[in-house]
Image (cartoon, rainbow, N blue to C red):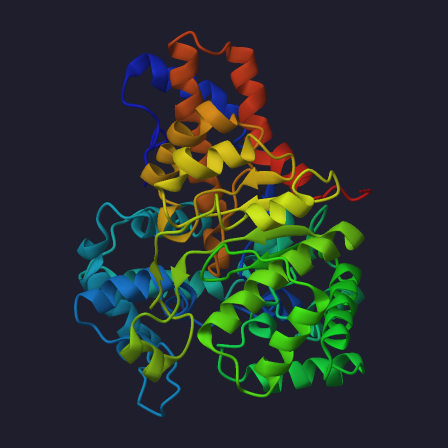
Length: 473
């Protein structure tokens, strides 16, 4: 069992204030505007297959930690792309996790997992080698019950909005099925997010083939740069029809570049012909961020930008298991100079809204907080990926608040593929915010009533407003 005071300050006065503030956020609906849950999960509403495929196989946090200690991802059931054998026995995978559970001491993975086991599945005992089979059996029995199917859990989690993330080439069949079923959970919605990275990065293998597929999907001529832009606009419109309120951009850098249409067309033709250099590809990506900002002025999609991840850094992992399996590493990132072309063009336009994330904590105080405090279009996204831990969340509030305040931030995003961890992650963020605000109250820097209003805003009202999730907006 997890103690009810976990993550609150140890100092008694602040702890008591934090408990009081937490009450104002604890039961608010969950707004999940940025994440990677597969919408098919909710569209089909099938039981989760087994505990290993719920907790281990898809969770990069878990598999990378075990891999760092010499346990190959194949033994954890991570699918291979090179034809190598992969463990399929869920119980064997679960035993590996339990036998190595000490590796997760002090990590958010342990905290999230234990909160899910306790709060979602009602388990109270420890996880270790001796209890592995018993815990596995208990979880398997729960997963077979109707109240643990995805849609039932969606309702129990009190999710008001869940945004998934899809490529423009996704035909959104899962979202169409949810809409046809009239389902979003009582009071809840499942929407999509427009993620065009694979269509604007000529360095990404198969780029030209995907561009051709974009043309087939839209029925537009993508052989020209204007045709390519029109095809992207067409897909944005389809995503908006499916509920999207934001786009999502995960480039290596935050570079932006304002090119003439003629110069952009030259780069596009070079890329289609296979003659683009690395510098050309970076220029094209940078220019396309500006183009997407222009499109956002037209259609209202909120831009999310989260650069700074060197993708597939672990080459052996990439060759064996493919993309997005835990082989990415954060990199130092510049925002001040990189974003200036875009901000010069549109940064003060009231129609534009950009949510900035980072994997480089050094820029919160030096760059991101001043930028968000200086441009009405900019909001600071929550600590993301390697930083969405209790300490990372605390450091964010400590380093960004004095310059950006609370209301130039966008509220918490869970950024997860692990559906059952969504309420755990939001609860952690609400407890950390309660502790931070409690210190301000204890130090007589903020009245208790204003702190109570602030924590409700951070947990619910801000993300709903920043991501334009009001149903009538």
